[in-house]
Amino acid sequence: MAAMTSRVSKRVGAISESATMAVDAKAKALKAAGKPVIGFGAGEPDFPTPDYIVEAAAEACRDPRWHRYTPAGGLPALREAVAEKTRRDSGLVVAPGQVLVTNGGKQAVYEGFAALLDPGDDVLVVAPYWTTYPEAIRLAGGTPVVVETTEDTGYLASVAALEAARTDRTKVLLFVSPSNPTGAVYSPEQVAEIGRWAVEHDLWVVTDEIYEHLVYGGAAFSSMPVAVPELADRCIVVNGVAKTYAMTGWRVGWLIGPTDVVKAATNLQSHATSNVANVSQVAALAAVRGDLSAVAAMREVYDRRRQTIVRMLRDIPGVECPEPLGAFYAYPSVKGVLGKELRGRRPGTSAELCELVLEEAEVAMVPGEAFGTQGYVRMSYALGDDDLVEGVTRLHKLLAEAH
Ligand SMILES: Cc1ncc(COP(=O)(O)O)c(C=O)c1O
Image (cartoon, rainbow, N blue to C red; front, side, top):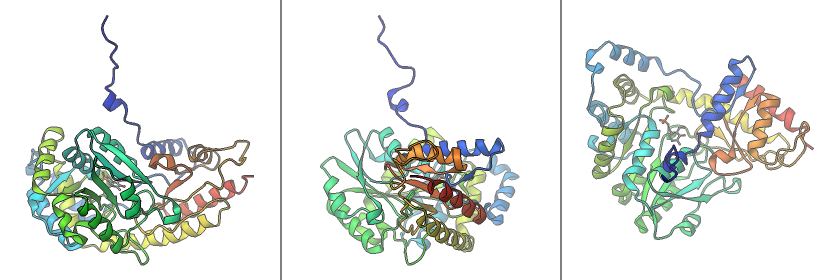
């Protein structure tokens, strides 16, 4: 008898649906069906892409040069512009050959881990984490080792906590600041301290800098390989245009690293997807060559919404919300509501609570389970001011009924 084989491979069958995408899809479907759903689920700016970027793309559409294959690693002009932009924004000095243009930051995450990990290699991942990281690590053959943080430390991991999780199998530390989903931002001193610890233990660092320009209040962004230059030869930087220029749909990101790693990742990409769509690359070129005035204007609006959402969430009984200092997410604890009776039900987990809130208040939030922690919800504040106020007001009214 033939051995039983499953239809889907174990490796791919083990991947779970992206919970953030699932919540967003459910909210959009309810909205399309005429329900007045307010979505705090999506991790994307609500602004249109700035005009000058769209114009550059429109022009590129009509140029037959861009109707053809181009180098898999990215348009040379874009690689050069990304190197220049990186020097301008974070202070990291790299050659254009150290830049690989990818299909969004997401592909940079996948290719970065694919280029670094072998079976048996562990990666330290601070939780709450962006839902894609553990999947990318496992698909690459590695094992995510979770270092949990809570609201008590503002979701920041200390060197002591990282050291406690390190073993001789640890090859990589994944570092994300500002963080999705918590909005936590490490201070420049903390970035340097963690970077020095990584160097001391010969770790690689994959650092995701996609929210570099979205920091508020007294917080400052700091790039780890700049703070600790000895790390540069063992560091991959992930970044992209999605969040900075409101370009999530254009799908352009990049990976920066030592030449050997970038070459390996480029070889992988040359077989997987080839070049990123040329029109999108030309749009990204206009974005990174331009100034930062559009993102400065968006940041001001996000900051206003951030202060509103934090103030309103802190007024809700049973909800605790540390101040997010970056990105565009609040990550409140809802532990004070769980286990109580609410509209004839008794939600015991943040996933159950999110379902109830979507049905009863028509407000979409992503449960903390999607980010590796139970008892929290992620709320994106990249939505219109009026919707934001109306959505949190509905949430307050509903949760106030819990007893
Ligand atoms: C922390 C982080 N990194 C990377 C990405 C990937 O962005 P994209 O693939 O749209 O460039 C996201 C998107 O949500 C993110 O939140």
